[in-house]
Length: 83
Image (cartoon, rainbow, N blue to C red; front, top):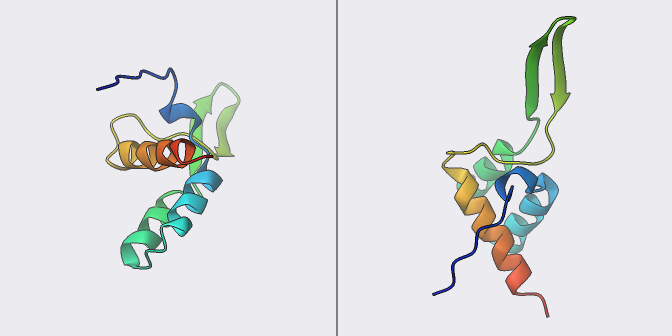
């Protein structure tokens, strides 16, 4: 068994890469579309002294999310399959 701890792993997952990996699974279903939808049009909003600030989120999975580990495993599998 190999144990690996990658600092910030969930914070740096790119949504486009995850979506491409999901497409490569060749598994077409509502589940696949739901997973892709989870990564679409995500926004971050915070209150600042100048008022609310909002921007699009293009990477990262929330810590403790159900999909985060699955998305990480999907991306790690892509890396391990490289020739």
